[in-house]
Image (cartoon, rainbow, N blue to C red; front, top):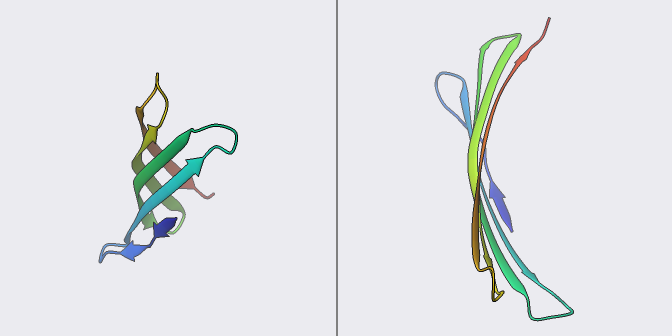
Length: 84
């Protein structure tokens, strides 16, 4: 399941929050996994030919395994786009 929206501020900054939930279960053995992934993306266009973007998110996963139970991964993304 995934929820996402795009919000605009007065200064032409776009906020795009996203939340993803996943449940996985193996058909061959008793392995189950939950994944929770929130993320926030920001976009700003100061000029007509320049676009700046950044996002931060993390993913938390819960496994049903004897040697591995919980994992957390983080992501950071920064970019710019300039059109000549």
